[in-house]
Amino acid sequence: MNQDGRDDLAIYLGLQDFEVTRVEVERSGRRRRPIKVIHLARRSGAHRCPDCGREHAEGLFEEAEAIRIRDGSIGDFETYWEIVPVRVACCGGTRVERLPFVMPGFRMTGRWFERIAALCTRLPIAAVAQQAKLAWATVAKVDGRAIELGLGDRSLDLRELRWIGVDEVSRNGGRQYFTIVTDLASGRVVWIGDGKGRKGLLPFLRALGAKGRRKIRGVVSDLGYQPILASRLPHAVHVLDRFHIVQWVNEALNQLRRRLFSGAPRDELGRTLKIKKWLLLSARENLERQHPRLLDQLMEQNQPLYQAYLLKEQLRGILRYPWRYFGVLRDRLHDWIVAVLGTELKELITVALRLATHLDAVIAGHQHDVPLGLCEAINSKIAALRYQARGYRDPEYFKLKIFQRCSLPDNPWAQIVL
Image 1 (cartoon, rainbow, N blue to C red):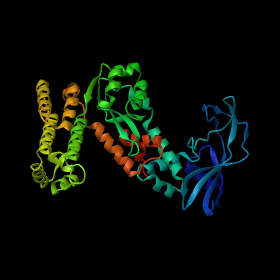
Image 2 (cartoon, rainbow, N blue to C red):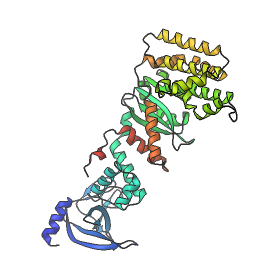
Image 3 (cartoon, one colour):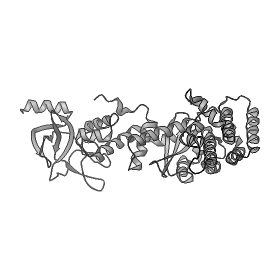
Image 4 (spheres, one colour):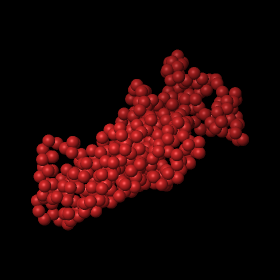
């Protein structure tokens, strides 16, 4: 390549202060695959310290060996830039200069980093690694750093919190959990804590600070977080999510079914209810056309289970109704509790007593216009993310992927045209 061609290549690559000295094709690795190496030399410009960013007009000396920086492929070859860096005297010692075209923390150019980050928004990590001929861990590291850059300073999200939702989600499909804190105004996840309950939430409350805690007007959560929230946010309104109340009743209904049909089912009714227990737990309006009739036929053969099912649907109707008079709502909930206590359904009686203790938190969900189902929607997104990836070995990387899915609706890396 002649001098004019090398100058044109330097301009194309955006190397204003550098020049291309030569371009070679080499064979690298075990398979001796061909790669393209573009040799660079500094033409002008200052040398920047990698730690403090200070510029130095002159360096101390050149390094003994050149370094290679991965760039996007030109033609059919993997492409590398090779240059001999300079050491500068700074920060109480000597440092290898920070080259302007290198992505900090990576042996790749900034434009190659952007391309990998953009690909990660469109393809699985394994597919990107295969296409780019990089290790899976390298691509995951690029993806994680790109998400951090897209999120920016997350401490800013904590300053304007007013209404928050708190819930836990399984990290690995088992008994390891994350505590997820959601800003109910923006619908974005603002904090992910390790563990659940006090262990998972306490670091968030500490990061919020005394001033931030005073700004919190209300919290939507389940009972597991109520003690620490009541002690650390005494002036906030505590709302019990309706989803968890229905979850209590469904679990009680399932326990009742197991008690009535304990062991191996001995008749057709028991076998049907074991196989199709979802008929009991599903919302009646969501059943397909033929299923309500089948459910009614099954329930007529077992009065205790039918009674529990009707009480479950009655409570769902109370919770779903858009109440304007909250005294009437309290009366309806009180009537439901009394009706349950008058039965012999010990599983539902446990739910009724628990509900009676937290009536104010249930009614608060109707008094304040907050999206009560948002936390469960976030949990569904996280579960889908975990399923698509077949799990995450690195919990910190999983946190970043959750932030990307639930806090970056306008992901800047997804806007890059490939």
